[in-house]
Image 1 (cartoon, rainbow, N blue to C red):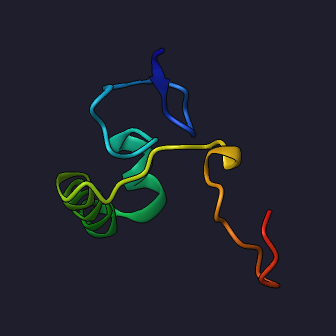
Image 2: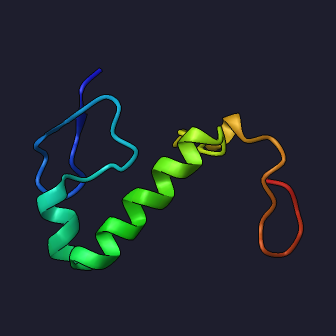
Length: 70
């Protein structure tokens, strides 16, 4: 499955740690913040702390703000 930028829909590399392209990321956050986001996400991936899911059913212990389970 090919990944696409959330903003402009261009193709993304499968090993990208972010869901947007460099051009859009820099336009949204600026150079410095974009670089910080990418560095932190890459560090999280290297430490196996990065969870890639957009399906809440896979996250069984996720709690709502009021403490009830989803």
